[in-house]
Image 1 (cartoon, rainbow, N blue to C red):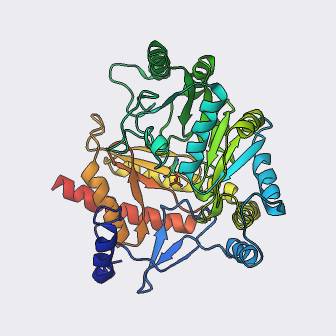
Image 2 (cartoon, rainbow, N blue to C red; image 1 turned 60 degrees about the vertical axis):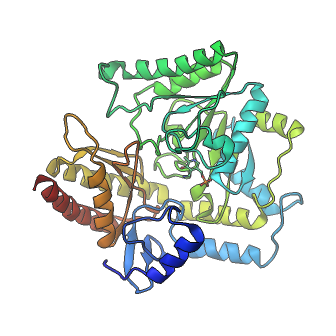
Image 3 (tube, protein in one colour; image 1 turned 45 degrees about the vertical axis):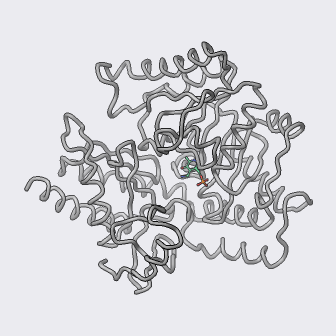
Length: 435
Ligand code: PMP
């Protein structure tokens, strides 16, 4: 859709927000309305949203909007008074976890949730060291930015953070056989523990996204996470699963992505889809940890988990169940990935296709053998897709992986639009690169 770019608004934005404030696309897109999986510009052109996971049950879902409106026009207040919504929401939320993860605390953002998880892990273990992957994004506060060295140019690994190479089955480690990859990545976690101990720092925990989404929706070698977690626990640390992106049924079969593994985290952090774009996030953890932490450490979040936020959170859970959106993530998810794999047969630009429910990664390479990342091609593809009315983005260490992560009501008819547009754009880009 070659719509008119609103240059007047763009210049006003640059003046007040600066030119470096992240803005998608070479031709920035102005949006005025959203409905289901569709977004609309001021000229009435519609765009298929294959990127945004925060409007989890669909943009402006009427049931979520009604719940927000109803509670906002009745009472909104912080959590230091008794209110049914707050208790009921926390009960419903914790019921979707295993028995061990029985208590919750609510925040407004995923960054705050991870910050709180770090405090809790450090408080409960009495240790300081945190282990993460070397291409992690867990949020924007100072303590959380310490974990995101691969992502944030200004962030520095401090003494209390160590990272290990992303456990990437597709790219692997040069000179290491596929069968030995899990051993190699597990050994790197042990190395981080050993280095901490040599420096007199004990391990408080390992913080990872169970779907390794920001790293590129990686296929992790089988057994890696279970074995790495056992090592961290042996060293006295806990496992924090960052489900800010992965949770609330995105992965289809399970409500929580960590449930794909044979393990239970000690702390889980939540956010993004939780309030369908309303700022709702939080921590679910072992009851004994939350009890111990709350007895001695002070935590209060003025806007976290208000009766309005909890009404919204409950409406999201209702819609997820009523519209069978997790089942849809399984069936439509399989349809999309089959389509992507078909495109892979045609285009040598596609090195790998990975999927998890309603989340897909298409890794682009210049050469199938060297796996040289196709960075410029990925950028060109997302811009050409946008011009044709389909919104996607990129992820991964090189930004060479197409990131497809639509709202959960995405249907096969939408997938057909995505796949045919991607086919056309891949054809154009392949022609350009071979010219
Ligand atoms: N964790 C993960 C895995 C994320 O992807 C993000 C946001 N991209 C965050 C945490 C931070 O969430 P927020 O932007 O709500 O602070």
